[in-house]
Image (spheres, rainbow over the protein chains, first blue to last red):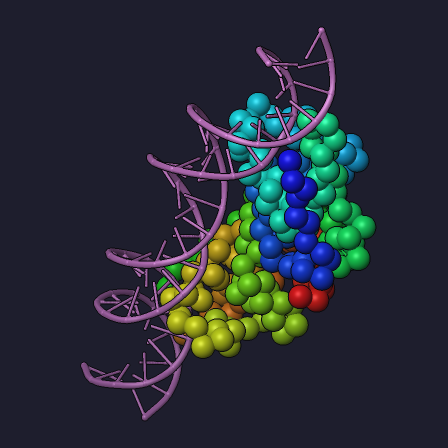
Length: 100
Length: 100
DNA sequence: ACTAAAGTTCGATAATATTCGAACTATGGG
DNA sequence: CCCATAGTTCGAATATTATCGAACTTTAGT
């Protein structure tokens, strides 16, 4: 598979990050990644279809929240925490740490 | 006009707050309210139709971000900062203070 | 009472999103 | 080479949303 497109920090847009995090599925993905450090797509589906998860991961990648690298047949995802923090200091922690 | 419905803090939902703030018009409203303290609907339209603004203010009210009280014929809006802070500490500052 | 001011509500339109099945792609193992 | 695994992409159905004009409501002023 061809490598994924990850936007540079300079293209991060606050509203788009907030939008990406406003979906319960995606917010959960981000929270789990914050805990685990990294995880494959399959580890984070809650029984949801792969195509649905693929959709959400793509949105998270597109806004700059998640980095995905291919290792064998699995896609390893991690938070781009340092990048997000550098562009929007304190934002990610303030959101992820809230108890829902 | 009958008074507006403002949800109690216990009904605040993180994802819905994030969604409300993911719209550029609404984020701008919230930022201006954070600066000004309070403002009427008319003061914050950027030339946009009243019905459009009314729509956005309703969403901000519904998620608990904005309080609206009727004074004469104008609706005075203010941030429910203390309420939001009590439910989601640090969230509002972390978002509003970011430079877009 | 008449009128203007300030918003709200309604209705329609156009744009976006979410979800998921089905088909497809690439990698690794036997 | 065959096959299972892990995801992606495509397409379609459904649902939400944003925007705005038009009509309506309430309050204040004269």
